[in-house]
Length: 159
Image 1 (cartoon, rainbow, N blue to C red):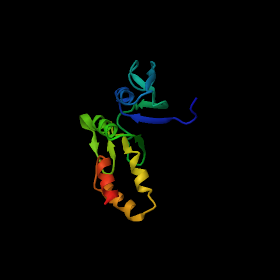
Image 2 (tube, helix red, strand yellow; image 1 turned 90 degrees about the vertical axis):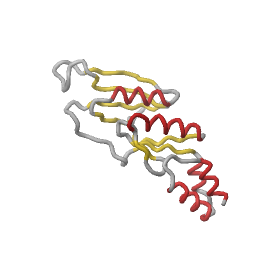
Image 3 (cartoon, rainbow, N blue to C red; image 1 turned 30 degrees about the horizontal axis):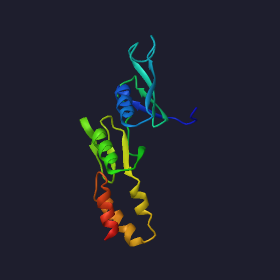
Image 4 (cartoon, one colour; image 1 turned 180 degrees about the vertical axis):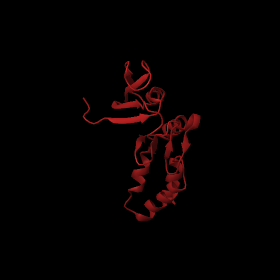
């Protein structure tokens, strides 16, 4: 069993969020949906907790029973290492759909308010080049982007 599990607090969207997230990544599934028992906070029988796995990593989503209270911030984000531009494009599109928000430098918020970093593996490799001029050009290119464009990074690197 995984010793540390990411725990996400939603107002009332734990199940739709978990279903969206598990649809995005291979080796992902809903493990358990726990309903509110009679006498518990919230309406008896409503979804209280959703346990799920994303790419084999366990998460728990809670529906807060006392109305809006907690909100997500960029201080914590889910970092996704992408292999191709197609993967970046697909995840970016699906996570910003239906009310998500694009942010700078590969960051976005999904429609539930969770922050994600959608990062092609080329970015840290190019930023880590020992030539400071090349790495600096890549940094400047990234700073001008919302969704990361691998070709734009490579063009800056090769200037």
